[in-house]
Image (cartoon, rainbow, N blue to C red; front, side, top):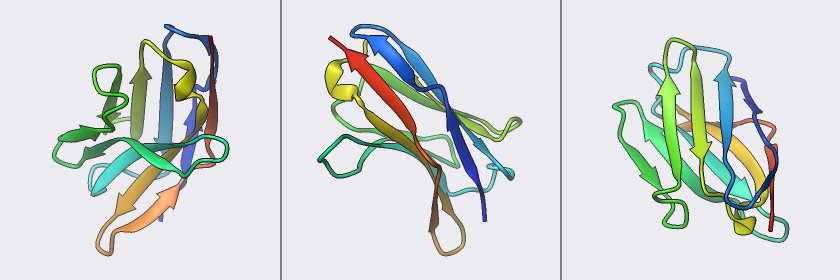
Length: 117
């Protein structure tokens, strides 16, 4: 099991930046992958970015070139650096962990990101 705690959300103007953090309650070294998802009002939760244990990453097309996911195994923390934010990035952002051996998924409580135009 793992508990995930997100932080770093807030209100920012379009074009601004935010960095989200996801602190895990255990070592993330052996976790299959960790990711950030988001859910806007009236929409389904969608993948934003994911980082795998080997360090590879993938991103939603809508955030490529603007967002960067990274992990600090020493701090058991995953980050999402968000630059050039747009109003359509407004959503609750959730941290996700995919644990071995059965790919069990765990979620944080979410952090609100609001981008004003």
